[in-house]
Amino acid sequence: MNPEVENSNVNRRSFIGQVAIAGAAIATAGVLSMPGSALAVSPALTFSQIPGSGDIKVLNYALALEALETDLYAQALLRLTNGGSNALGKKITGLGINPGSPDVSYLREFAVVERQHRDFLIAALGSASILKQPAFKNAKFDFKMETLTRKQVVELVYTAEKTGVGAYLGAIPKFETRTYLQTAGAIQGTEARHTATVAIVLNLLFHEGLSVAPLANDNHGIDAPIEPDAVLAAVSPFIVL
Amino acid sequence: MPDIELSSHNSSRRTFLTALAAAGVGLTAISTFAGNGLTPTGTANPSVGPGGVPSDGATQFAAIPGKSIDLKVLNFALTLEILEADLYRQALNLASGKPLAAPLNANSAVYTRTVGTGGLTNQSTDIGYLYLKQFAYVEAAHRDFLHATILSLGDTPVARNPNGYKFAGPVNPNIAAILGNILPLEETGVRAYLGALPYLDNLGYAQAAGGIFSTEARHSAAISYILGIDPGPAKRSGDISVSAAQPAQNTFEFYLKPKTVLQAASVYFA
Image 1 (tube, helix red, strand yellow):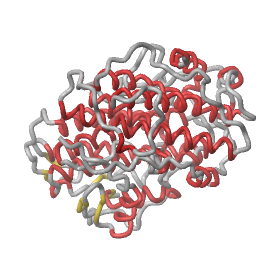
Image 2: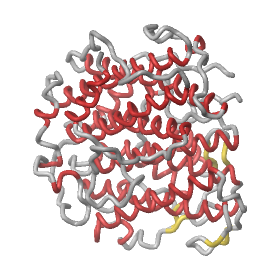
Image 3: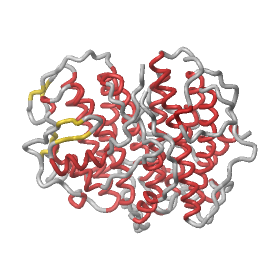
Image 4: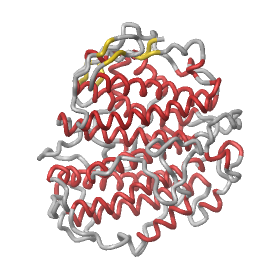
């Protein structure tokens, strides 16, 4: 067995760039063709539109991403397993993947975690939650999941988790106080674990040669921050308001 | 097998300095936000002062030099990265049939596995050895980065322990055992960074420290995968939760206070 070695240039910037500029493709290890939703919010959301100020704004930004990830996992599992409908009423035909396979089993595990992150932030924010504001309370997510192959589904999850890692780092300087820094870090670290795990799953199932973490010659082996507006530009094609 | 480009660990400070430049955010307000369900470390902890910064920094970092609390935190991180990089170097030597004292070779291609699987599948063994090799260079890069950063900030980086470092006990020469001895280092690193994070006054430093923290979390998950362990985070003895409202295992990373980390790390000092 030849473990495929990393392509350290599978970076988020290419993901961000592709999605934000072309609105059409996500680059992961290979190129995942990923058309955004025809219903997506346009122009892309910006950090200035996230409700609240100071620390609450940052937490609402985190909640927006956790809500997206939670729904992504739910739809991804529908697609990989027995199918169903998403919140927009779109029918997603299941691919019938064996539930014991590593993609389905890890996605099941991580789906629960993302939901817990989301629900934790909802409870924490109370009436200040972005999901309770008129402009966002009907938000839904359209990943065109019904069109994706098994590999594309797992790549999309990987890209979302990896973007989450950089998104939390990019949001740190937006905090006014240190009050929630450690809690945000505690969530970000789990996203990093998910990213590494899903990278291994992709390598094993599809021989992708993804790095599980930045290599020494990639930003000193340190995860890089992604600016909130860049993250929002990347995810807006999936957001339906 | 394609060549692994692992060898570059120059300490350009560009990214870090960029991060600092972006961090013009001061401590402007205490959150108006307490008591609504989010229970950060601070709320229940009387040692946390205004702005969520723990007030016991002088105690926690008493053993660590530095001109300011930020530099103490950076030197604390460097203390751990020197240790981790050295033990990875030894582990890679052990797995590759080289003398334990041999320095990390600038060319990663000189390393090939000479030890057995220790019961892992051949596939897991190959991937595990690859990670051992990659992460050895990453930890060295973290060390060099922190060293250069502290110098650039006009302070003195901590030096390596004159007597070097050792694993807590004998390590059997096989990949399962070697990774099994590396994993606690990574997991402790995760907890150390998360515990130190709120002491940083400068949010740009927090951003950089957070970026190192999450790579240690990735390493922990990857090594766990190879060893057939859930990627975590899993609570260990002494771990502290970030929130009383923590719903379950696997949802939030745990942390340790800096003094606890230094005490735990002392077993690795020769």
